[in-house]
Length: 326
Figure 1: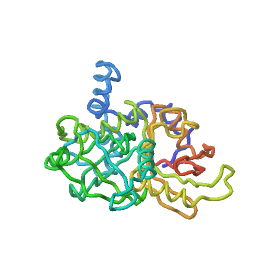
Figure 2: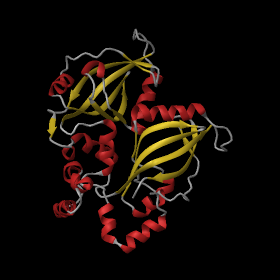
Figure 3: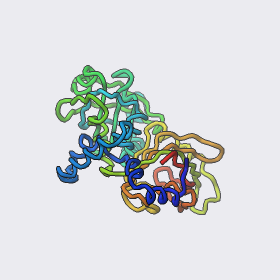
Figure 4: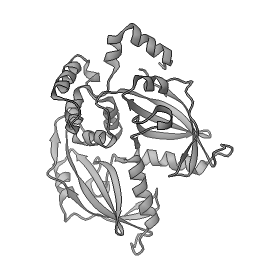
């Protein structure tokens, strides 16, 4: 169902209690995932917990963070640790010449889009280790990264936080760079969550995006086309492929999605991209505290000005968003 803006408003006006049930935002997971940000009073937290108890089980979680958990395959029970580490990129596997361009491209990508990994360094830890990298800074001739990593294996956590663990050089095809990871510095001992609602991994994703503690969330698909210039006369296959590849490899998290259309604070999660004809098709989850913004997003009459993507030097025309359900 893809309702028009007027139909959503009509449903809200006719049955406010039904609309309240659809407000999935944070609900039961708020207390564990967002309350640590210090937003709201204890009385508000109590009210939110009471509200959450009235919701059916499938709505008792932050829908945005649940989408993240689903797409990376986050285990319901997992150890999680955060910290920093350094890495250096090279132009070849023999690691004799540093690659400033590759290192800058990777740093820029993480600072713009964040990075989610469903199988972080499987060559070292085996499959299924989840990584979230949300900040990068150039320090001397290396990159410094801020990370949160989750695994169902305590042995993996021990290995990750062991300063003696070695990491073979790996090739990053996206930036054509060979990387040497230095040991990871864990900030404290890993914690353990018994279920998704207590996940520190998801909590850190929420904090990195300043995810609102009460929000409307919707998922769906949309198409976009990239051009070589603002006049949109020539399609840019290279820019469109680069954006698609980036989302399929790293996912994409946006703290201010299309602020030129919706204003500040709309949160976007793009987890899949496919080339369809001469356009890209994207799968998204978007959250906003504003009811009018979610109405506007799901209205197929909403128009989007062409915007420049400096990362891929591409000018994008977004087509209307197709929201699945309410």
